[in-house]
Length: 488
Ligand code: N01
Image 1: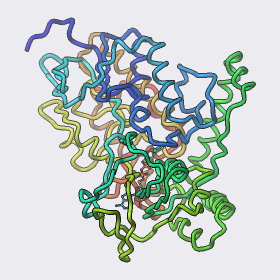
Image 2: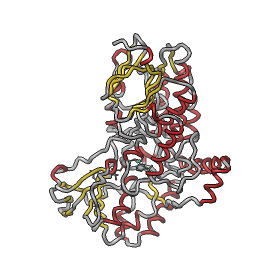
Image 3: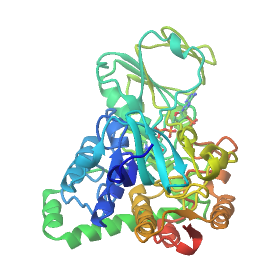
Image 4: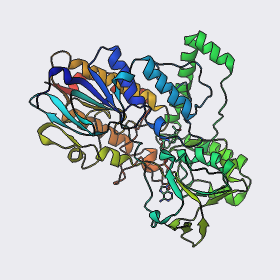
């Protein structure tokens, strides 16, 4: 295949969510091109395009969960609802001239490194693309996970996942069953309970929940942020540090303060739930931080509504008319909502990437996922990941992580403009980095906290989260240390 040079991209960005858009903006500002963004969905926004369930919102404050170089002064609430975040991403893309560069409805199928030409040959469902570099902004939370419960196909009513909401189904007056009690469930349950005749929540493990204190941002504050960018920046910094200290409050490892954070969460529960039996069912038996710590002010009150039942008996099977529990209780339902999270490992495992000397990413990761700074993998030149392995966060805004990674990738991309055809992480640098991660993980809250979560892979290793503060990651990853890379 010999394409004219004009059809060879400098960078292909996969995914038009927070990471992909941030990368595209910064590439344009740095004059890196030609550039294209492909997105499998029919609109931009990534997770905020997919997750449209009632009550969807961010559990990180808006002024922190936004790009520092694309600020928004007039966020409506402390915690923005999904439509507002999606609108922000659309406006940001438009304002930065990205829309003509984005090809929607185009799925990345895989890519093969062409050593002779120093190019990636990318396969999409809309044809091939040739590019010098690929930046994956695919993230890990977009393949809905459905539980392996017998009889799942037998159910005669409507059934859908929180990340693939079926808006054609009117839940008013219906008997609704929700499976799962994670971050998505605690947002959707209060909304569904307002309209459903009966809502049954199937809980396997109770989450730790802290008060949210959500509120509308006063008009005066919005005007101030508009007038005085410094005031907005100070608010962002305040929120950043407020969250950053959580890394030392038991959110990454058991600390002296873990017990105090747990006591705070228990008080939140005790204040909201007076019934002793219900409170016992809602009390976690593992350490706070082991699973994502949730925030909500309306979840506990919702569980005490007369039309809501909390079922803690395990689900034995799904039948034509509802669910049967292991104790033999039947729940007749009109609708089942799966709030059962995402298949993170499968998302990365499905990346059909063939690097140098025919090395497949699945081979490179046969003992578990891992990447230098969560960004680059030895054997895969000019391939970069945003929010790749071990760069998710439990305690602070992932947007901060994205911005650090974008800067690192920009440094790498700059080397390709100065005569180098390829930049590839040195295996020894990657090994050193992964050793560091492993040793920090050993006594982390996710390993030692007495729970299982989506953070862990099949062998029980945490390959998803960064085990330290954002500032530590910034020190580690913000600038690409070129001595850790091989240029050629
Ligand atoms: O998914 P989850 P999620 N039978 O994996 C249960 C981000 N997010 O969509 O705990 C019964 O957390 C499972 O039970 P257990 C955020 O990063 C962010 O809620 O495994 N139950 C659990 O309760 C988050 O961490 C926001 O015992 C079953 C639930 O399903 C990530 O997305 C908002 C089951 C899955 O919880 C995922 O959150 C929403 C079974 N067979 C999401 N299988 C923000 O606001 C699974 N479960 C930023």
